[in-house]
Length: 480
Image 1 (cartoon, rainbow, N blue to C red):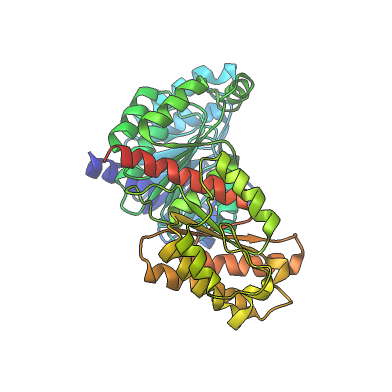
Image 2: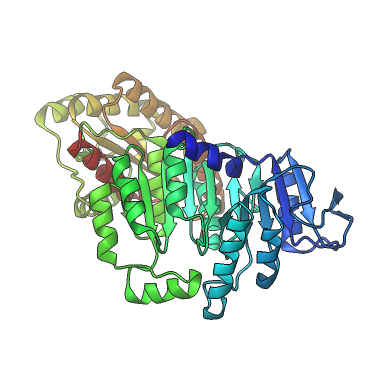
């Protein structure tokens, strides 16, 4: 099964030939932009513009139909009027592997439902798999193909399926800013043929993909999706952002992709029985994916006890309440840990129970290296399942040496080397939006994520992501 699905779908994620339908000789249409983007992204394969009359488009030889290209087409990007698409696909004559129809006007509107059935039949007759219609395209760093203007070039480990093209763009752009790197993203739109389950099967089998994320409005083959996820036994984390979980949301989904979204209780049951993590917002979705990208789950001892360490007493108190509501415990240390921290004789104003609150003056000691000694005690005697270090950057940047922040992160890395596999480490970098601070935060975030430390903007973001990690660990633990 796994080798078959890899063989079937790898030409989509690493196409050797790309056909583009709908590009104009004036160079202004969406398909012309697509050609420019994949060239800029480094696509090295053959690109075949398809045009009824033009000899050349954007400096590339044009062909009259999908059946006339010099080589068979792995991926065809199609953006022409809805009524013209089915005849075009039929002309593929078994020479196209994947056709992605960007055009709308199909099953998402009443008058287009018959046209969508005709489209799917034409794809079958032409011997190809159909993506869409009513979507935006694919983003695959390993294949150097992208519909998005901005996205990381590095091949990552996060595989995405999105029923919304616009949301797919948001996932790429926001994910880039937060440190996500993708094995691929496919927008599937109305799912006239290829649907979420097909791509879940691919990502489960794909060695490059470590975590799967899915924005879904409906699964027409819901039973197959359930069985695929159930049989996978959460061997890879699956994060689901479900659109249309309320009656009003279902109406919005129906008008968006022609989807019947399904009862919320069904999706809650799916989550309980398969171990997929259900989230409510785009931010929670990206935060959870980042957590799974950077950290290795510990199903043998699921995350429960959390230690908070940083500068900001009020922040710690609020976070303790918030984490407790999420099912995460921020409990005072036992006497052994308290005695060891007290013996360090830290400056006045430092709280050594859990949360551990350190004024900036404390964290500045020895240019931030004092943190390593504190963390070493916490890891050795505080029994944490996860440690969240939170830093209010406005108290550091411009007031301390640059290396203080670097030393704090290096301390965290060294302590994890001394206590391997003991506790997850999560970093929260808080700021007030001041431009110079935000720029420093971006640089610092990029370095930390590169070192395998997930970075969040607020304690609540880190809490939700840890709760997602906990849910996955508990599911795997219960079935071990």
